[in-house]
Image 1 (tube, helix red, strand yellow):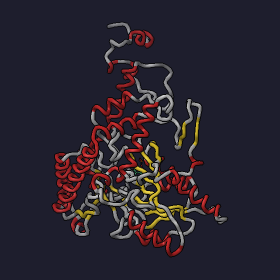
Image 2 (image 1 turned 90 degrees about the vertical axis):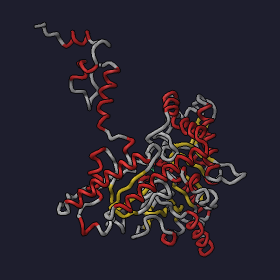
Image 3 (image 1 turned 135 degrees about the vertical axis):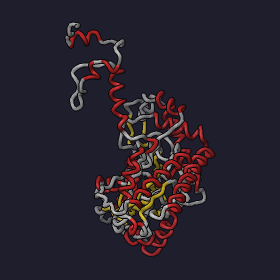
Image 4 (image 1 turned 90 degrees about the horizontal axis):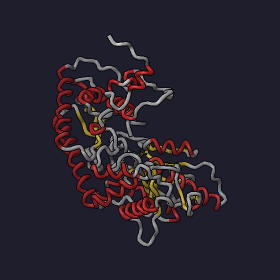
Amino acid sequence: MYAKKSREELQAEESLLAPVYARIAIQESISKYEMPEGEMLPQTAYNIIHDELMLDGNARLNLATFVTTWMEPEAARLMAETFDKNMIDKDEYPQTASIEARCVNIIARLWNSPDGEEAVGTSTIGSSEAAMLGGMSLLRKWRKRREAEGKPADRPNMVMGINVQICWEKFCVYWDIEPRFVPMEEGRYHLGVEEAIELCDENTIGVMVIMGSTFDGSYEPVKQISDALDRLQEEKGLDIPIHVDGASGGFVAPFLQPELEWDFRVPRVQSINASGHKYGLVYPGVGWIIWRNRDALPEELVFKVNYLGGEMPTFSLNFSRPGNQVVAQYFNFLRLGKDGYRRIHQACRDVALYLSDALDRNHELIELITDGSDIPVFALRMADAAKTRTNYTVFDLSERLRDRGWQVPAYTFPKNCEHIAALRIVIKEGFNRDLADLLLSDFERHINWFLKHPEHKPKQSGSHFSH
Ligand SMILES: *Cc1c(COP(=O)(O)O)cnc(C)c1O
């Protein structure tokens, strides 16, 4: 028998020598909602948190998210080396600022910014912040025009598809704008041309068009909407601009559909946002917005601060923000070049098309909504034929795919298509053909089980939907 040591004695003894999992701090229940009174060794804290996070899903099996889950080790190293850089300190970190400016130029060219006009743009924390900046510019421009004409400017509206990402609903609530949503209909799951025009009037600050719909990955018809707005202008004198939400498609279309006119080649397009952390291939924390020219960005929205030294224009909702994601974006541009981006996106699209085709052909229970030919994202639903064979839903399928770690979200469609429940699969860099085959065999296993137990009544499942 040894004499029981006091807690103080044990703590005094505890040093780097003590095995991590025998330390006092790791054996007691940890403080979760209040800051602990004392310290613990950094290695102990690391292990506690690291271990807890094992319960999070495996990011590489996350087919729900559009956000990057794999980068090259050199990119990760560069990001770790630049964790300490604040993007806002442009005077202190002039090279980081210069790298941001290069990225703005590179992206503006990618989006066919008109020759001879000076493209303006900025990095943001993601597409949501970029969307706020784009929407605010449209609002300001509209308000100034209305005031100059001596007309009321108190009831702005924005026209968009009901399939918009949540950031646009937020934008409308935060800035008191009436959202005018075009509902879906069976067979049309994004913004329709005629339907959009019908909702436009003199109070419309802009039409918001999506390249890569959150619901099914499809591109909305930017050019056709622009042409229809031209006709509206001829008939009614309304000059309504377009903002393109290219959160996903902004970094895909220039490489996979270079002939498609959706960007600044369309004169009505005033601004475009994209997520660097989606098909820009950077870990989470970076978005971009580019305006067609200086005129598209009202200058009263750009603030100048001098307290960091120098005089620096800022246009953002945040002030401080990590600079390392911008560095990582530039790493990708330099490392991959246009060919590299094209090859990666092409490889993702090949996998998406392979998967969607195999699911479509092999499984009578499944019907495709999209096949992944726009961005490498596709959605599927239970086929009508399924209803006579089994009463399982995509919610059951989603839940069962989890048994080996696959995260494939199931959700219902919005207004006028609430009866449609879909599964969505986002293919990103790092998801290869071999993983696709493994996923297919798990689909196979679950569907066969459904068919063997058709009498089973599934319980009602909720919708889990991820951006
Ligand atoms: C992801 C997404 C957003 C929001 O982008 P974040 O970068 O996550 O803020 C906006 N619009 C669309 C179409 C998206 O897919």
